[in-house]
Amino acid sequence: MPYEPTPDLASMSLAEVADAVAARKLPPVSSWNPENTGDSEMRIAADGTWYHQGSKITRPAMVRAFSSLLRREGDTYWLVVPYQKLSIAVDDAPFVAVDVTRHEVDGAPVLAFRSNTDDLVTADADHPIFARGDPDTPALYVEMRDGLLARLDRSTYAQLAEIAIARGGEPLAVESRGAVFPLTPE
Image 1 (spheres, rainbow, N blue to C red):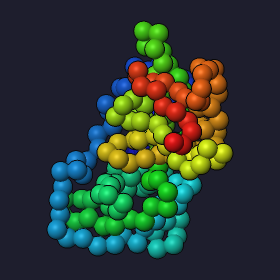
Image 2 (image 1 turned 90 degrees about the vertical axis):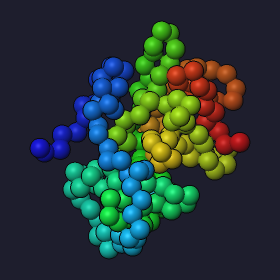
Image 3 (image 1 turned 180 degrees about the horizontal axis):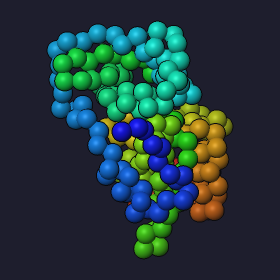
């Protein structure tokens, strides 16, 4: 079955986002503990571009398939299959958040994010948004799954800043599923 990207995030209802998240069946990489390890000779650049032996991986379906095998152990990232795990270099975060949309459920805000690999997540206590760096030039991240982060790209950062400004208050923050996330590093 060929890869079909998820529809535009802005056109999706929160129920459709939840259905898309539920429909994505990820391999159980957290339960696989192979003893055979090695180096994948792969790297994920800070802009989300994937490389193998220095050559860019250009097929989105291939990147999406590899991204479903990612696992983080401390500061090390792995591509994991039942019989082997291969280290992979990650320059910053393994994903890039390329879009955000704000929904409301019973009058409360819910923020949904899309990654460069078409993964969807709603921000909450288990999938926090946080800032790193310094207050003048923070980098914003959202946790996609199991400690795997997505750094917000420039346009998504700007969208989130607009949501925070509309919310008002100091420090600049956003709210999703009852959790409040400051947009400046502590």
